[in-house]
Length: 451
Image 1 (cartoon, one colour):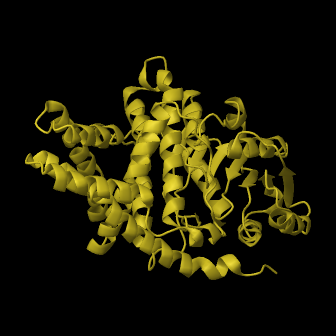
Image 2 (cartoon, helix red, strand yellow):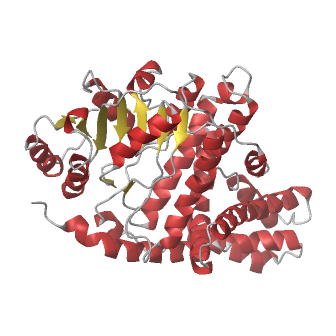
Image 3 (tube, helix red, strand yellow):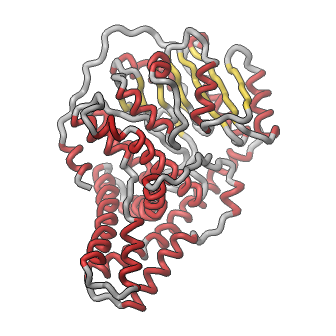
């Protein structure tokens, strides 16, 4: 909590950029796994329609570990209809999840490519995407640039969820750009092929291979910038459960990355000054939460009749501070961006609804639990089969009610902590309602038959 305002107060130190620049040749890598074929084809159509010379870019589709031919064969057929423009690869038994797939694509990148571009299978990029990428590389002189993630059809159906996800780019990524300490966030990143090869390519050691690569690129002395321009839009997770899985992966993967590179990030052994260390740490802990342990300890202490012990007070204080932290971050960003009260409230509800997963992800990563890369469902089929009442949130709610009624604590701080534990359930229901409306809005494009 103290780190974020400290980082925000540090002065910007923007680089001047390099003078020499050659027109880039792009190799666009689209990694897929069990994706709806019509969605992938829509992504490829947008990539083929770039206002960039066709001879200056290629597209590589790397489908990994998709067992059902009905999911990858239509994509293969579409790619075959564009020889020389798209290369389609299908591999089974690929290790390292998305990182492994991207490394295979890197091996098949043509020799004259200067930059690798990653685009998620659900992202439809603007026609000027590659031109803007070239301009950004020229203007900044950076070895890699990261564009923000953005989502279709959120203005009327899920503005709060969109605002909650956007907070990272509007706050953490923007501050990181000022310090020239930007980490990658996956899709819509453009990386010098020379730099990517120099640091050993992608790594499947963490579930956020993008952030982990960003740390290695910065440690090796390569410069990165955040370009705050919307150049493409993808799909939100189509259910609360999928949104939770996504947040769990982001949070746990970043904690893994922090632990893996703690020696270089936190000690003078790394090639970073203090400003960059703090900014990198701030990015990796954007969804960090240590509330799991205080919640468990407070429950145990109250059930044991130890309400007036320092331990119970400390645990309650940690829970209240966690709620204050996420509330202030979302509210301040909403005020800065002049969002309506309704949107800010829904964004706050989304952040609170995801807090249990952030807490669990942090705990699992810190305790060394084996983490698995989970692909976010984009078909909507699994979302319709999930229940509307999240079990984890219900358990927290019921526990808080039992403690309030059974123990009847009198300390204001403990009362505030228990009331805070009541919030995730209604917040989850509100967020789930938004995602249901969103799923209904984007369903036709997902189910349409490709020509």
